Length: 213
Image (cartoon, rainbow, N blue to C red):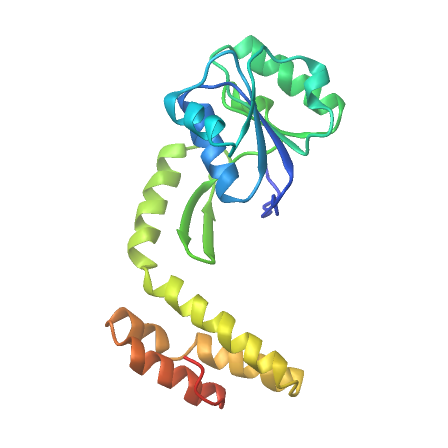
C-alpha cells in the first residue's frame, strides 16, 4: 500500500485512546508530546497513565468503548488487548470519517505512525508501509547517528535568524538566499565540534545582521 506522508498539527485537538495498557501508554505519550487533548477509555490504566490522569494531563473514562464515545474526536487510537474490540472501534471511526490507528490488526488503520528521529524542530519519519518494521528501526538507528544534537541547536538558531530577517522586511528572494546559504554553511560543522560561540558569530556574519545571540 502506498501511503500519503503528512505531519499533523494536533495542538489542542481532541484525540481518543481506547485501551489502558503499555501500547496505549506509548501512544498517549506521543500524542501529549504533540500537544493533543487526550482522553482515554479503559476500565484499567497502566501506572503511568494513572499518574497522568491524576495530575489532569489526560481525561479518563473508566468504561468500555461505545460508538457514541467518538463524538467530537479528531483522531482515535485503538490499542486494547482485544483484536475484536479494536476492529469494532476502527469500523466505527471509518463510518464517521475519523482518523484511526489500530495497534492490532494494523491493516484496519487509516493511518500508521512511522519510526521517527527527532532533533528538536527536525523530525525525520521512516516508513516501510508495514512491509518491515525491523528495517524501519534499523534505518532510524542509522539516522540517529548521522543527525546528532547539533541539528537541534542549529534549528533553534535558525528560528531566531528567520525572525530577525522578517522584521527587517528585506527582499524576499534575498532572504531565501541567505537562509539557503546558512543551511549549506559550516555552521553545523562548528556546532558538531562544540564551538557554539563561533557558530553563532558565523551565522550572524553570513546573515548580515547585528549580534543576536
